[in-house]
Length: 194
Image (tube, rainbow, N blue to C red; front, top):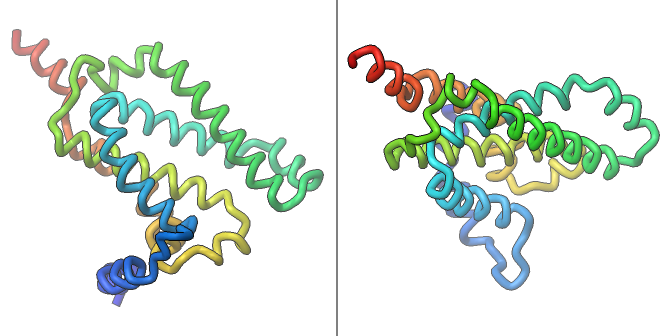
């Protein structure tokens, strides 16, 4: 049986165990991560719209590529401690992401892949926002040192920090962008029909 099928079959019991073991007086980081995923997925998508989230997703992929291939991060890792590496990688990712988003939002890319006037249907907005938030959480947790990632709850590790989860969060938005038409595609279709 594939690892993904085993993970999905254990999901209901993992969720039940997580809810049963929640200490609301002293919430853990795992609870914060799961609640952030749910709340941010709803609020984020409703406030931005589908096409803007797609441009943000493209910026995230580019920033991830820049941070993972930047030679100066490997050089600086020798000079900073274990926690410093995490902070350095997160900081580099955020700077690259913000810079790329600002550049791409003002470029022709926005008109190429999205129509900034279109909000998209509610289910597209929700899907893209959850994929976006899940991808961000997975990226941030991938920057954690292995010793810190091992302390996460099994459900959080399975959903966001395992190799399979990282792969699925990376390809999920790509598959959604390919399969779900709208925005620029609708604008071009309308333009050619007129």
